[in-house]
Image (cartoon, rainbow, N blue to C red; front, side, top):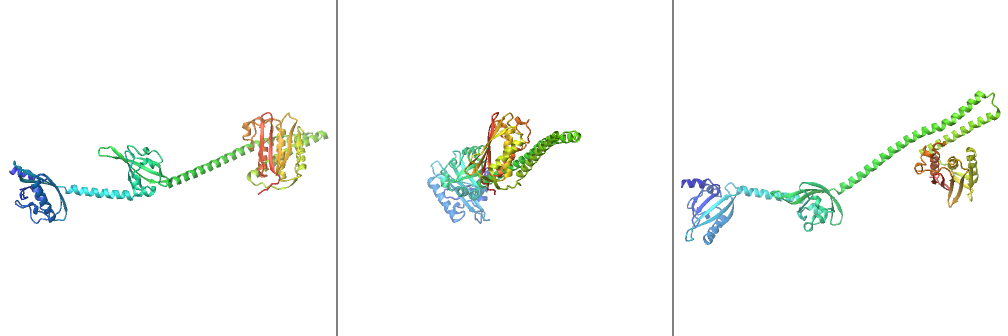
Amino acid sequence: MDFLDALLNNIDEAIIITDPSGRILFFNEPAQNQFFPLQRLRPLRVGEFLPNVGSARQRKALHRIIKDINLKKQIEKSFAEYSNHQGATVYLDLNYIPILNDENELTHIYIFSRDITPQKVYERKLTTQTVNMSNLIEQASAVIIGVDMLGYITDWNEHCAAMTGFTKIEAYASKLSDLVEADDHVLRGDKMMTHEIAFRTKSGQILTLLLSSTPRTTAKGEVIGYTLVGQDITELIGYRKSLELKVDERTRQVQDALKKEKDAVDLKSRFVSTTSHELRSPLSTIQYAADFIRIHGSKINPVELTKKAEAIDRQVMHMTHLLDDLLLFSKADSGNFRVVLEDIPLRQFLDEVVEEVKLNTRQTHSIVSDFYKIPTTLVSDEKLLRNITINLLTNAIKYSPGQDYVEFAVRQYDDDIILIVRDYGLGISDQDAETLFEPFLRGASVSNIPGTGLGLSIVKKAVELLKGKITFATKVDEGSTFTVTLPANVAIS
């Protein structure tokens, strides 16, 4: 029996044996340790009635349980919560086992008591943490959504409701795919993933959410759903797009500036190359004529001297026109050219231009003129108008080698004056037409014909200064037609 006592005193469970009335017949040390501190001034004793242990409420419960065991003769279970003499709460899990004899009479009651205080304390802490976590989720200023494996919403915090307008009840009755403007499968996976998702509110507004998807798993690691946590980044996305547009715009500005700088360098290079070439030829002619006169001055006859002087005059005039063109181009390109409007006697002006061009081109071509029903006067800038007409006519003759004539027509339509210059010469290729008005660029097919490549660019700038427009039609080996439309009365702002 001593061996049995030692065994019973060293197990974790408290054991109390009573008779059918609840009188204590035996108890082990764990029972004494569990029941002695329970608001008792003395320890348990054999012969004491167990229902007398504890408070009035506890004694009442014990009386009921012992009565039920006597009547039903079945195992009873109960849970007891006590405060010990130190004020700490103790939790006991009690099992009452009836012991019957062969005649089915109750002879003893075995009471097994287990102290589950640590378990209960842990459960309460866990419950408290769960409640705190739930409150944290509900009150968080972040989107927190839970979905099951079928895609139905299982969690929907207050921030979601406020942001989307969908209440919890409305959300719980919906699938996530009903609210997401995309396939909600992108939010699922076996590991944490982050996505930018378009989310539709109850009012139809589309929000952009940055959501992190985390699988919910069982203790065995089986995925049973997903938790989505994120923020509304709609405003941030708008700011990002605005910033991207600004960066793109700034990039374009930088590219434009670089292109302009490159164009300026290319223009300067073409200017130096072209002008040096164009100036060298007349200077050489002048130098040759001057040297001839200096060496043979005493022997040269008056006719020959006149020819040399005229050659010098022609080259000086050519250089003067070239420098005038360069000056006009420079002023117009920099925006420093001042348009001077005056009344121009149109017919007289046109006749003078035709004669000047014939003289400058040594009468190589006839100019067939058609000035039918033109106004008596034209309000315009005479210098610009002269530059336009002389350049167009000179080009028409220059690029019509072997032809007899070019055509020059002037018409008035409503409030516009139309100038039309047509030749039957070389024409312009499609490739050269793309850069026709670029300064110091000349077509490949006319490289053997002297020129600076500046004439048409000056014409275009002069036309723009007079608020007009210039167009052309051309066909290789059949000629070109240039049409300039100018307002009859220019209004310069």
